[in-house]
Length: 361
Ligand code: LMR
Image 1 (tube, rainbow, N blue to C red):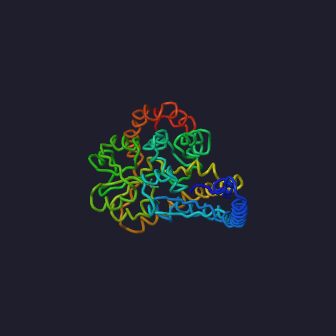
Image 2: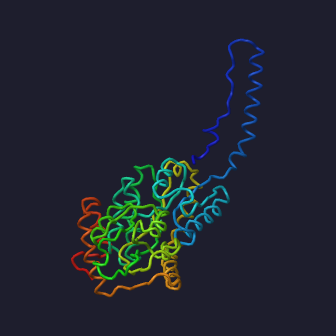
Image 3: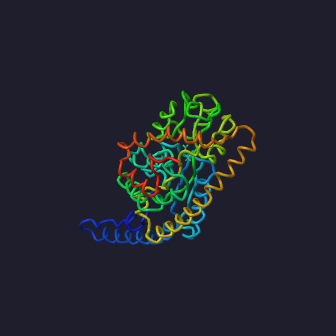
């Protein structure tokens, strides 16, 4: 939504005096005065209209992203004293994955937090570096990137697409699920696996001999239920809140890759905000980011317990040997994707995290 600037967007409309005729001149002067008065009186009313931020996302409310979006809403409205109203649309109720990106660029929504795996189709392929299997062992390593200069440089790449990157929000580490036990790399061969729209994820699935299928998040449950795909990968918070565990008999805690978000806004909208409002929203976003990153692991752990308690899915922890076999199979993706993502970017992340593809552990 464009910011309404009463002085620029709705200047008082004075009627030009016609040539000749005193009566006409007087009449126009009166009309002009009335118009100006009406405009002046209506200005405070216009200025009081809150600035609306539509924040669309695709996951359930009861997830790390869902909670963080609600937290941001509360803080943003509080800090701006109600001058900003944030409307959160969860669970793809407004837009699905692909549509929400387009809607943001068109200005139909003002804020999104897509997974980092969904920026390729927008033309910013570098974000797919976050999808490289095993590139992060834990949240601490990840935060060296997302809270450091490499993360900022990546967000800045969005500017050329009319998008401002505001923050990174964590979700967690993905595990594979299917209707058969997944212990060794051989178990994955031939499975149709749903993926997000990332070429790195496509390469990852092919490295295991799977048939990757890109699909919107909102369609995954049904695709699993009807057998359109055999399995998927997700952090447990997503698996559980979409009830995927009800249609997946086996979950293997591979934690082979990271899934998190970039919170983004329409650049024109953001730049057009009054400076004091923007500062307050940045403050709200900073607080929401700290909150998101604090709750992500807790939420995922809670979901894992809930999946176990449901008794619908068998949860398996791979042995050290099995984990190493999967790691070895997947790490080739790093080399295969160098030309797409950029060797230097991959190296700069290795530098931050200490990952060494030649010394797997
Ligand atoms: C997915 O599509 O699996 C995830 O990106 C959904 C999300 O936003 O966490």
